[in-house]
Length: 222
Image 1 (cartoon, helix red, strand yellow):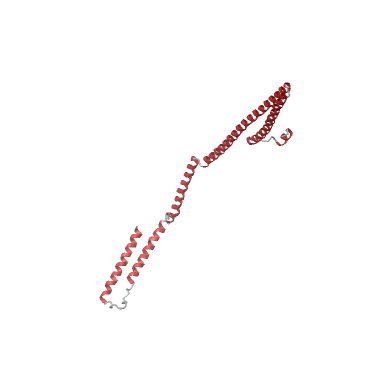
Image 2: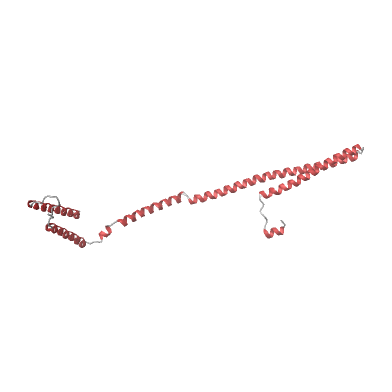
């Protein structure tokens, strides 16, 4: 890239892959040049033989000298190819190392992010907050289900009034049980109740009502 373009757009970043591609193109050109030197050296050898056949030893020697020059240039060209091939091998290894290094760097970033997201300290804090929330929910549930607040709103006079009202209800039940007449209608297909059995049935009903009243008193007293 021309220098004035580099100033305008900036120099492009050279990667190992791009450099290897340039080197391979250069090697191809050098191989073509080396083949040309080889052909020229062979031609000079043929010419030297022809000059010898003609008896011109001086021209034959000059042809052999040119042949040696072409061979030297060919060898130099192949040495350049060899050095470029070594460079390509080194760059390919470097590129592989860069890829591995980049992958390891990305892996390290991912590991660090994972450690931050799931660090032991963060997990412990989360567990403590979760346990605290569970305990507070249980406490709230107990508070909402507790009736002692409603019961504590009744003062002593109101509680005494409730006791008096309960006693009045029990008295009404007692009176109703004493004034209630037993059902003496005999069922179908049964014998009529004799007059002597009436006092016994009334006495039995009274005992049951008395027993019910005592149970109510025990429950209220408890």
